[in-house]
Amino acid sequence: MPRHTGSLTDFFISPPIKPQPLIPNSAIHAPLSVFPSPFPRRLFSQARQLQNTYNILYARIATDVEFLDKVMGAVEGVGKVDDFVGQLWTGWKNLRDEGLVQPLHLGLFRSDYLLHAGLNNEPLSLKQVEFNTISSSFGPLSERTAALHRYLYATTSYYNVYPDMKPEDFPPNNTTAGLARGTSGSACCLRCQKLRAKILFVVQAGERNVFDQRWLEYELLEKHSIHVIRQTFDQLAASASLDPATRALLISDDTEISTVYFRAGYTPTDFPTAAQYSTRFLLERSKAIKCPSIPLQLAGGKKIQQVLTQPGVLERFLGDAVPAAQIDELRDSWMAARVEAPAGRRREQRYKEAIPAFLDDLSSRERQAWIAMELIVPPEGTGNYLVRAGSEGAQSAVKVDVVSELGIFGWALFGGQDGGMEEKEVGWLVRTKGKDSNEGGVATGFSVLDSLLLVDD
Image 1: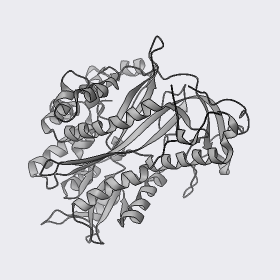
Image 2 (image 1 turned 60 degrees about the horizontal axis):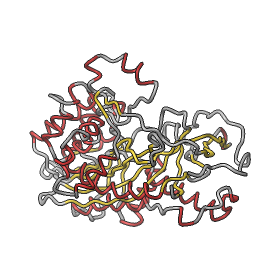
Image 3 (image 1 turned 90 degrees about the vertical axis):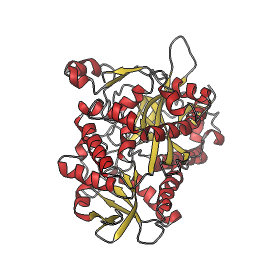
Image 4 (image 1 turned 180 degrees about the vertical axis):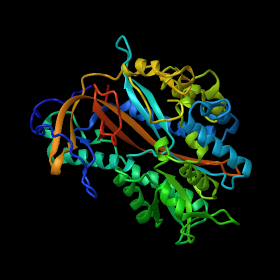
């Protein structure tokens, strides 16, 4: 695979700048790469094709109550050793006993992959890192990063650093429109086209990733005439209520909500007290469609990823839906996994040499809440320039050897009385970090937004 090297040695480099604390009500640009990252054309195509199968798989998991109770429940599953998962499952169980009024579920998904080099000069393969069922972020900003790279190529040809670049090697990225179509489709299902019906974005206080969310908001308004309300759990505790007759979700007594889109609620820190859980369960009790519902959120737990690797489990969920060859292809995208490193908390992870010491500090009971996955070994020899905002608008661009992670977006609307389902694969993102980093995430400062340059490997 080609390296990002050549004549562009110091052109984009300035001395590293120590990041400064953010000024209240200020904004900085998202971290990004100067070059798109090379990625095998055949594996990009494979990842896109897999997404449709994954959409079906996780929709079926979310509607299999018996399976979720066993794997994620507080009686015999992850919930008995993980308080966060246990709280969500227990609340969901109580709501089931009470009687839920909205059978539909909406998922905006992202399946994340790394390239795996393997041993003995094996061909590169695609290996899944995780499957996200809640707050699958950075679709809109990744679309704009891809547009930036296409612009730089069109205006500079990247100074012929890689002469074989061609316009067709920059794949289109229309993730924002795709995610909006999925979200707006759920609004239509409730026949809430009347002007006062809106979509609720549940957000974190002091949200730093607001612009990624805003682009989706703008798309919903401009292309689908759907208005968005943004509130935190604490704000909703005062503003949200249910119509006693219909269980319509109302904000400030008069604005009906058709769909609840969670960009918060995926981590225990979003629930510092019982009040936040109570608000989460109030939203789940309503007739608004949830993205995701509690069972769909639970389906995204790491423990589910591990259980799916067991013999016969994939066939149970997909045997009547897709050909056996597609099931085998899905299974081939996984690394081996076993109990002992996160089962329910999809965003709390440990890597490489940090794992043994971390496990040594856990009790035998606590270890049951964790899943250990065989290490993915990415290919070496790819470099890039990573750009982050510094103080007072200054930029810092650093040339490093990198590892890139591909995410494929999809959505699914399912669970109605007729058992029907609609699903689509709708776009992609790339996040790139220095190869020596054991952490990930753009919002946490370890990765930058990137895009793809398709190559023949």
